[in-house]
Amino acid sequence: MPEKNTQTNDEFQALLEQDSFTPPKVGDIVTGTVLSASNAEVKLDIGGIMVGIVRGRELYREAPEYANLKTGDTIEATVIDTENESGELELSFSYAGHQKAWAALSDALENKKIIAVKIKEANKGGLVVIYGQIVGFLPVSQLSPDNYPRVSGGDKSKILEKLKSFVGTDMEAKVMDLNEKEEKFIVSEKMAWSEKQRDVISQYKPGTVVVGTITAVTSFGVFISFGEGLEGLIHISELAWQRIENPADHYKVGDILKAEIINIDGAKIFLSAKKLLKDPWTEVAEHYHLNDKVSGEILKINPFGLFVKLDDDIHALAHVSNLNLKAGQKLEDLFSIGKAYDFYIISMEPREHRMGLGMAPGREASGKAEKAAVAKAEEQSADAVSTDEKPAEPKAEKAKEKKEKSEKVKEKSKKSSAKSAELKA
Image (cartoon, rainbow, N blue to C red; front, side, top):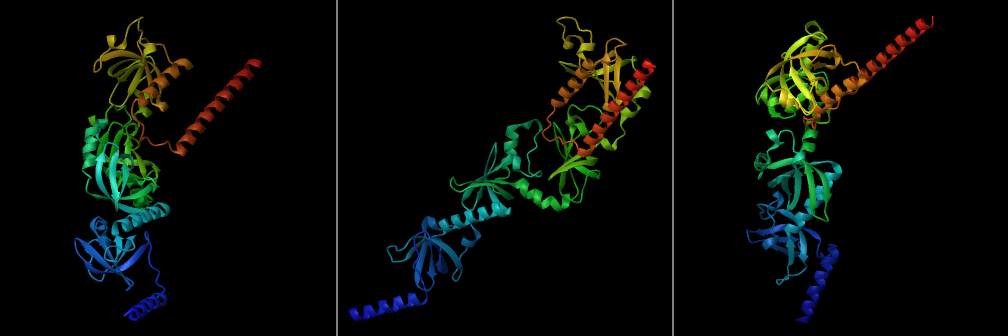
């Protein structure tokens, strides 16, 4: 009997050597053929030499390759024990799936691939996502334009409500950051969306006129949808030539708007509706003149002055220094929003879309200090509106403005030189 056992062991050893089979170690990933599969356990044939078993919490069925296994399927598993109580390999789908998920995430980050993540839960900062069994995060700022929660007034409870509507759904995203040591990763749906839209966006350029439907109205402008799933922003400053305090007073979701593309920055498209409208300031000199007495309705009261509506298109600024306030008086004591008052036009700069008003005639804002005060007041008013989404001024327009200023300086210099020459003569 001992001789027979010795012979069997020798034959087994010879078989191992012949097939160059190396017994697996803990942590190794092995490939096996499914011998049997149930909800309780899965048995695998490892190279026709060993049998492995996956059971209990090591059964991992969330990934497609581990769900609905049947006899004959080939699958990978990780060795967690080289021999259990039955002399079989103790295996894990869970650990193998975890390793494969990290490998896939690393590959996606390195090669900028798009992956699908499942939304597990939502919080005020964004969405908790899961890839395999690895938990990650998708910040709200990294949602695509289609899913970004544009809520009027920035109501946090409404934003959270919108984010919660994504729980249980899948999203395509790109990996932004990966930390295997801390088992954390961050993804961006916006980056994946941008890549998919790149070819479509490339068909458009600044100057293209589009017609779209308003999809959202915010404090800083309106978003319109056009073309093949594209979306662009018309900033509040590009909606109309006249001053608009609140876009919601003039526009609503579903309205149709025509606009011109003025800038494309990656996946961001900026548009202008006012560029397609006639600029009322080109004819302002036909209707208004310096020192004219005019009646205007108060639109807004600021610490630096009054914004006054002269007609539907022309709005002017009455700076506090030109309103004859006495010591201790406040603008609110003398003026009320919605009421009309008489003013005098003391400055006009149609090219800059500016008009200055005062309570007395003959005070044209020709001095540098007063002009600077008016300009600063208008800038402060513009800053009061959110400019997070405002497009950068196109380089061509900046260059044109710089050239015009340079020509003005040269012309002024020539006139000064000519006058000096006359005096000398």
